[in-house]
Length: 406
Image (tube, helix red, strand yellow):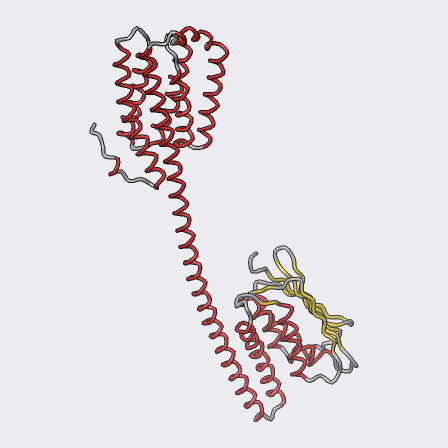
């Protein structure tokens, strides 16, 4: 097994790289320190050398695992949990040493837990060490008082070395944490800046596309108006009243689609229609077209407001046919008329209820057969259902359509 160069490893992110290089350098440095301490205490009349030797074995195992797996998380776990076990076994079983350094190493291990393993693991390490320290304080610490009074000069030097090492490691962990935090903040600022630039670019492109789509709707509306004008010119030359009526109906249907495209390029939202506003404008235009001499009261109420283009065109044509038929056939022999259009919002669909208080004759229905057939075709196109009820009180249509998002 050959040792590797950490700089040649591919890391998934900057934080992983910082953690890996840190645990690699720390394990390498601690191997030298604890090897020296093991040799130093080998010649002393104390069992502390065994603790240092076991610690050296654990750290060497962490280093070898890094070389094999290239994964820093298990290495942190070996150091943190293995080190905690060694510290507290040493505190409670080795009675011929002062153990001042153990507590500073304990602090280092807790920091390593938070830094290398995350918040949850860090709190676990903190809790375990606190409970073990409490046990030492209550049941073992009194046995060390005499040892503390008779500390050998070598122990004092070792304690100084351990304190120096732990303070250096603690400072280095804090430094890495601050550096990583600053790096993350810098990356966040750059990411936010990039997102802002992308948002501005996308917004500009959307505005350009919106202008283009509105221009297309404007051109379509102009073309439909040209068609309407041509049909009106042609209608002026027709002498047959029935043919003129059919031309008028065709003109109305073209005007319905023209008004839809006009609203699209004039409105802010090119994808949605306010259904009640559109129905009101359509009814107003048809009232003017038919120039009714008798007053017709039109009541419009809509609970379901917003529909898209693919829905509003068939609905507009359906209502155009119904209003045209009512104006032409429903109110003969009446002093006034009433038309009611209700759009009812339901959970997965919406219902359009249309009624007038006129009496449609059977011949009228037959005469306007294409319009009624067109209503059926458009209803089927929207996967809807139609119900027709006629009685002495008037004519009632009910349509049920699926919502766009259902």
